[in-house]
Amino acid sequence: MNNGSEQSGVVQVPFSSALAEYLERIRALGAMEGVDGAVALSPTLKPVLEAMHHVLAGGEVEVRILRDGQQDIFQELQQRADQATEATNALNQGQGRMVVTAV
Image (cartoon, rainbow, N blue to C red; front, side, top):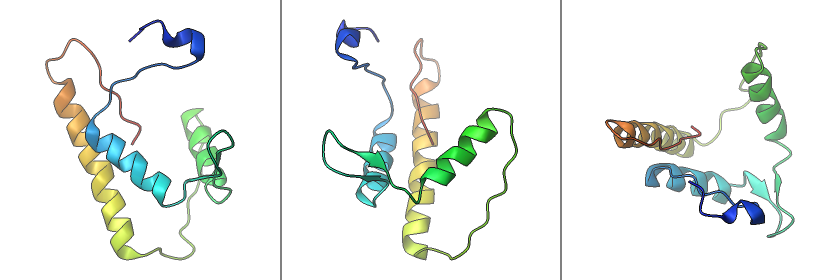
């Protein structure tokens, strides 16, 4: 994975096209806000990310849905996440390298 780009802070990580499509869709739906060079996580997602960090650090969280979102978008995102995981698993079968997914 090293192509000499670590000097510029860029690292190439292979992942499935399904994951790239999922990440682009959540970005398009507003997960990130701002313009290039000044992009930040949407403030409404910050507590969700912090909760995930607590879980990954061995903590326990409780998640409540206060109001359902648009069902068609919810289902689309669920399906995209599942497809990204399936595609990543398929790419990693029998490979000598690892393809990453963040879903």
